[in-house]
Amino acid sequence: MGKGSLGPFAGKVLKMIRRHPLLIEDHPVVVALSGGPDSVALLLALNELAGNFPLELSAAHVNHQLRGEEAEADEQFVRCLCQELNIPLEVKRIDTRRAAQISGENLEDCARTIRYDFLFQLARQKKSRVATGHTLNDQAETFLMKLIRGAGPAGLSGIYPLRVNQIGTRGEQVSVTVVRPLLEITRDEILDYLAERSQTYRVDATNQDLSFDRNWVRHQLIPMLQHKLNPALLETLHRAAGLFREIEQFLGQCGREAFERSKSKKSPETVLQIKKVEELPAIVQKEVVRQAVMESKGDLRDITLRHIGEVLRLTQAPSGKEVHLPGGLKVQREFEDLRFTLESLPGAFSYQLSIPGEVHLREVGKYVVARRAKLGETEAKATVIQWSGNILTVRNRRPGDRYRTSPKSREKKLKELFQKKRIPKSQRDKLIIVEADTEIIWVEGFPPHPKYRATADTTRAVEIKVQNETSDPKKLLKY
Image (tube, rainbow, N blue to C red):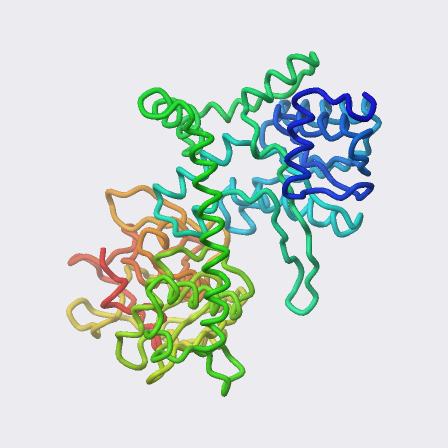
């Protein structure tokens, strides 16, 4: 099409691009292309804009190798589509299930991390922006999920039309801009656009699986709310997210100014003066803590409103009390200050422990002592294990570790057990794991494995005691 002769769909995309503004004429942009209807429509629309808004267009696809032949067919489809449109394509193939086992992330989070890392890498190389196919439906789904789970103004801001991401190590960061040109377009409009062009696309069967929270919200909750309460629900939630973005921007400015006034200038670490924090309105106090977390660890990843509340409760706690936040960040009350310290997590370690004997775990500053024991004659806080051998292995956790805590429970991933007991991530790599014959028989902070639990009939038992324990028995050890 020539200049000024765009179809309605591409015209709506162009208005979105110019209103925010999302893209720069003749500037490179990489389209995240899964092969699904949203990303295909985005690629076609941007390609259609050539005469009205010229772009240096390319595409990127990740084959996560999770769905066998379907994943291979997705890759082949996007290759053919880009070849037809004469658009350069970059493809990354990766065993995502294996990557998740190594990283310890759940499969969904790991796949998302891989996708964005790949997109950001390409954006750095090409000095381009990244365009994703998020729609008005995605905005509504995200808003509802965060509202129900208890997000604050930042979370309820939803998906931004344009977001600048800082990547790389601190001091060597590069900005990558992510844009969403379809964010004001519904999925129905996208399907109509593709039908008009007789354009095929790929359908991921897992998007129909209602065991996934987002799918349930998409296929069950939103249609019910539209039918019962508000047929224009998608547009309503999009406006609400926009209002929360305005609130977040205002609070961000207030918070940054208040943070600078509340911060102690005497320490190289981030230290807040409690008296100055308490003078602020409650909502600005929360923003000041978020700013302190951002300065200390470089991002707000995995930080929730609950974590912010835990930090603020330290202002009413005695000196010496502390909380541990995701990413290894410790916040401690020191008299009239809150000190934010980024803890270094220990690397993997493994030691042999003779019976009797002791071993020093220098990585975590602990001693583990083992001796033969008689039931009824063990020390308080010691763990007694039914074991007749002479050597045990003492280590910290590994990806894929599994453990069983009671005769009636099934074996579970250690990560799930840590989450259930609300053990901070900053502590998990410091907890002691004791192995016998490559089987985990005890995890610090939990009861012994049922198979190795000492009973009244046990004749060969080992008493294990950890000095300088990471876990607080009064707080964490509730079975």
